[in-house]
Length: 329
Length: 80
Image (cartoon, rainbow over all chains, first blue to last red; front, side, top):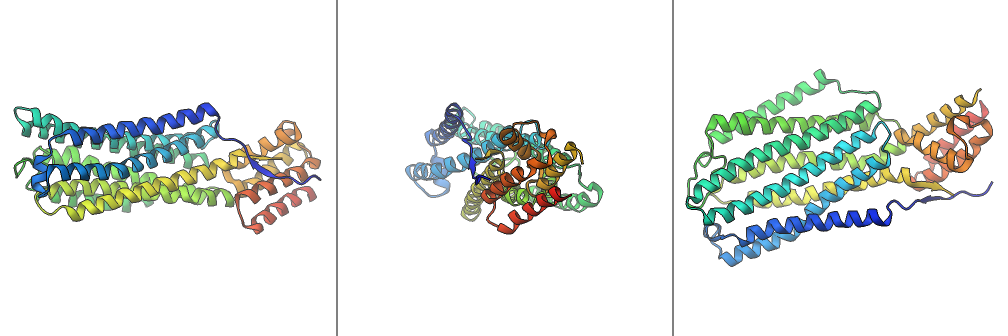
């Protein structure tokens, strides 16, 4: 018998490559637009708070802009890799699951861009408004509700995707036994979060000139419409991860599981880091008047780790895609 | 054993390695190399499918024991 060799077929044609490039360029331009809005705004209050000149603040914004673009591109890379794999296995049982997971990643990306635009717009509009504090408070309220909605959409899509994956192998989560301890843990987290909000002097109204309040709403309104829904969305994210890990352990195929491993590690990192990031971002605004550098440094490190998580997710999806591309000659 | 059973056995053996991707992989190889519809394969077709799986696994994993185990599964189907 003639010796056979495994080769990989060309995954994308020229037009698909052009569409992918257009996505990367388009998202980079949109992201740079958000950075430009922040740089264009008058940063004198921020500069005074951190004892820096306005020029130094602008320089800092530009220095952070490049890693920001790279993080956004890493998320897009992860999302597109899953989406392409889902498309390659289109008619299969697990194809729909991967498709929903990719939508979840795209929702996260959209949320990140929207929140950056809102931040830049807030600064720009406040400096031209008759009542800047009101503009800032209105934007804070809108941003917080947008964060809750995006969080629910992101984790909801991941849950739908991971549920479909698990169902594709005829399995489901043992809900009562598995979810009860996680639900108890998140109830504790909700209580802790409500307690932190209660102790936050900057919660409803700003405690210093140039500062934005963290929430701009009354305590009970914040707890019932922002904090609890946000914690509930994190719970949905962790349940999605539990479905995904069960799919990983229960699915057949020694080699498939080996190739799927990076995807699961990446998704685990992504969900936990994103929850940590959302929590820390809230905490950072609690401590507006104190030394922020520790929390800000941690946020930067988490963003870096989040980019790494998406590279792992993309590598995992691409490895699974390899099975579909193999042609034996 | 009828042809349908050979197809199911080949997919079953491949599933132990390629999991949910197994049926798609086997269908592609049957259509490309044997030029027939998947469920019509016969016992004589199995050695060729065994070779394709061996080459594919060799590309996906470095562990030769995995490839050897897969080949053994296919040998058992032919012997049955």
